[in-house]
Image 1 (cartoon, rainbow, N blue to C red):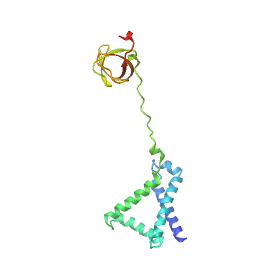
Image 2: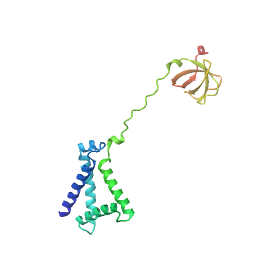
Image 3: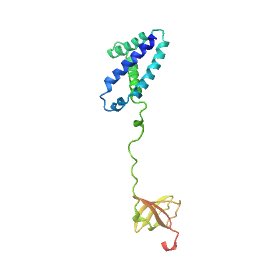
Length: 183
């Protein structure tokens, strides 16, 4: 029972320190208005830490004290540099776990899809001649102007008549002209 109270005390102290350190941060202000997600994630973290510390041969209070001393002395330079990296990784993990995982707003794209260009209707019902084979991309001659076009129905030989079906900016989509009046 004493070990559980020590774990709850350390949990409450850590939450208080996190709140004091991050309550004025504009990115975290929304999360502290409804802190249940932070409290639950940190509780799960400390429950896992409590289970690990119970398995150690020391009392839980001494284990928390050892962790605190490692954190304090690693920033004081009393331990080797790999301890500093380990403590930094632990503190970063706690910070990420408490505030940024999982955050729905970070995953959802907020930018709208770019608007598709409106088709240019002035080229519809226009006819031309294929200059190079359309396989499916090639050159066509429409009203004396050479343009690049895409064949919608596959291969069209050079010299054949085409009709413009669609246009999206400079991109023309063409097909074979079937009617004799198009000639």
